[in-house]
Length: 479
Ligand SMILES: [Zn+2]
Image (tube, rainbow, N blue to C red; front, top):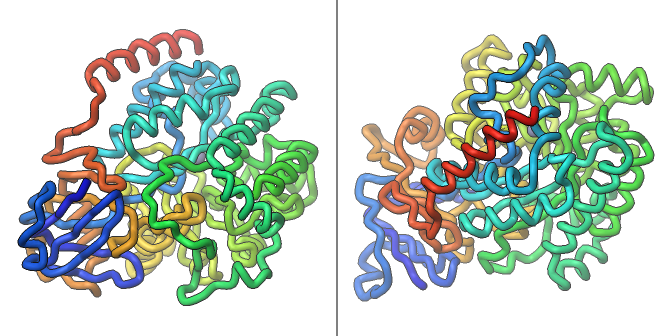
C-alpha cells in the first residue's frame, strides 16, 4: 500500500523543523520513504491525496488522558466540589467505580474517534475501573486497534478501594505489559533492567539534543499500535507496600510508570504529614521515577523535586485545562524547562484537540508569570518536540516527525497561510492559525483514518454513539 501526499505545505516537525513547499510525501508500507520535490513522483501509480491549500504535518501526540472520562460528559449528578479532593470523591471516583468492561470499551472508542477528527494520532491513557479491573485494558486495546490509532495504556493502581482491587490493579498492569512486549523487547528490557532509576549508565546519556529518547534502534516498522506503562493513581492513594511491589514488578518487566504527581497542594501536605517526604522524593525512594516514567501535572513541586525529575530524566506532562478547571494552580513549565526537565503536553481528557490545549497552555503561562512574553516557546516545544520523545520512549518509534524512515502518521489541516510561513515563525502559525483550522485528513502508519473530514473506518458511528448513550445513562443511574 503506497500513498502520495502532494501540493501541500509540509511542516516536518522534529529537529529539522523545515517548511517545504512544492514537495510531496511518499508513504510506503506504513513508513515515510521519501519527501522530495513533486516532479520526482510523476510516475507514481498508488493513491494520491491532494493537499492543495493545506498544511501537511505530523500527527499530534496527547501525553496524558483518560478515555473513560468520555462518560462524564453532561453528567449533572454530582455534589458541588470545593477543592480537588472533593472533585475526585464527588465525581471521578464515583464514576470510575461504576464502570463496566463494556463502558471502558465504548468510552475509549468515542474518545479515539474524536481524536482522529482532531488530528491526534498517538495517545497515552491512564485508566481506572475498580469494579471491572480484569480485562479492562484488553477491552480498550480492542477499541484502539479498531480505530487504527496508537495508544499507550495502563491501569491506575490504587489502594483507595481496598486490598483485593489493589491486587487486581497490579495484575492487570503486569498482564497487559507482558501482552505488549514482544520476545525481543523482553530480552532487551531484561538487559536494561534497573536503568529506569539508574540513569547514569552510558546508554542513557543525552546525545545531540537536550533530551534524548531511549537509545534503542528504531525499527522503522509502523507497528506497534499499542504499548504499555505501569499505571499508578497518585502517591496519596498508594501505601508504601504497594509502591514497593509495583516498583519491583516494573523493574522486572523493564517498564516505566505513569502516575499523577502533586496535582494539588493536598498531595504534598498528605505526603509530608504521613511519610515525611515530598511526593517526588517518596516516588524516587521507591524507584518509580526514570526515563521511561511519566509524572502527570507536577503543579506543586519545589526546586529539589524538579532536580530529581531532571536527574532521573522522568517526563513531566502538563495539563493546563484540567488544572484550571480544578482550580489547583498552573505548573511552572518555564522553570521546569530551565531545570532541564522534559515537559510534555496532555489534556487529562478535557479535549482531544491538542492545539486547543496548546493555546490554553500559552495563555496560562503568560498569566502565571504576569508577563505576556513568558512561556510561549517552552509550551509549543512541549507539544511539538517533547511529546514525540515521550511517545518514542514507550513505542520505540520516531513519532511526531515527517522524515524518511518515520512511521507515516500524518495530518492535513485546512490552512493556507495568509502571511509568510517559515521555519522560524511556524510556532506562531501553529498557535494563532492552524489551531483555528479544521483537520481534513488523518493518517496513521500509512492507513487513512479520515479523508475530506469523513472517517474511512469500517465502524458504524451512529450505532456506536447510540450504544454509548445507553451505557452512559445506565452508568449514571448506578452512581
Ligand atoms: Zn489525569
